[in-house]
Length: 234
Image 1: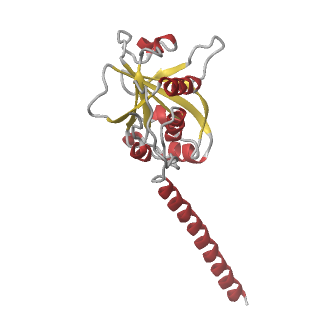
Image 2: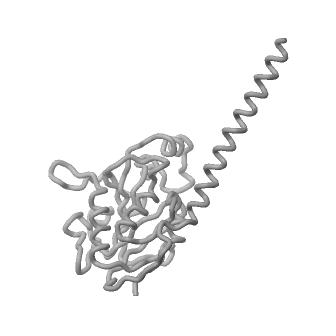
Image 3: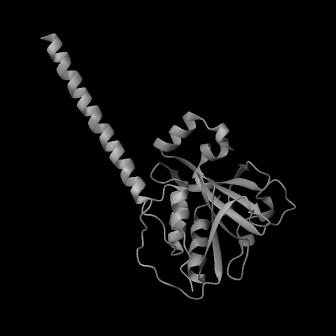
């Protein structure tokens, strides 16, 4: 009788495990498919698209790259450009903005520094976020970058979105947390919590939608964002 009960329990456990794995695999399949599905199916052309925004892809993270200043917005009025990196003599022509998990971003300069504990915490627990800002004299050839043109209103919507992603002190000043992993980068306090449902690429995608740029239905992968990044201007 005891053997029979054990056998029934094993069979039940096997079925529950099979069902759980099936649900997980089905969920991953839906996400994978959603990465190829655009949020907007109809394409239309705009005019007066004199402004350009770029997206870089590191393979894991996506970043928004914009000029430090143009005829509609000047980042010099909102952030100390020459204090972004450790070289205070630099006045960069472009700024790259990325948002992500604070511990993962600040303690993982490369995949070789990846820690399982940090990764699992970032994936499955809501964690503090950080803004990663990087300055460039020019957009480097070794970056995977795609650019699109937008009009003035859409561009300013994106700038406001980036602005409000920073955490500020009582005086309204952005809070610099430390140096980046390269001499031209720094980390700043950010608004919001990081989670598997709101990751670095989701932040980029929301910004693109603020600028009326198409993104994938599931925007958790940087490669999916790059796939759907197309210019819709005349």
